[in-house]
Image (tube, rainbow, N blue to C red):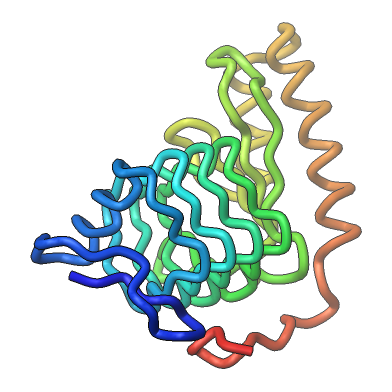
Length: 202
């Protein structure tokens, strides 16, 4: 399959793989630069994309469920409508990435969608697992992911108090919670931002 430049349709990478997921994984393994890649609607479920260079890539409506994007360069990438459920984004560079409209998962029948200019906020390593704590500004309030936990900030605070009480991890998590509250206060829009057209093209 071919991976094309989003602006010129020039071939960035090509191989004999039968799926776009395999082609993208092979490109990453080969160290190919996928800058400006057109990956609109790509099915990248469970894809291993560690250290991928996806600067300015068009990932509008891409399926990135369980994708491993650790250390990936996503500077300026368009992720509107992308499904990021359980995606790993530790140390990923998301500077200037358009995340508004990306969604995390369906919870109790609700599609949890990112909103605002800075909907993704991480702190780490932290807690008993020395892992990353992720906070998301969404159309259903602030959600938190910590390990297998994914729920509202309020539920996370309850879980911390129950699990850790006043120990060092509880103290550290509560400080992080206060920082998350400040971030959410500063960056939650008064109403959902408008999103670019589904092509992601300027």
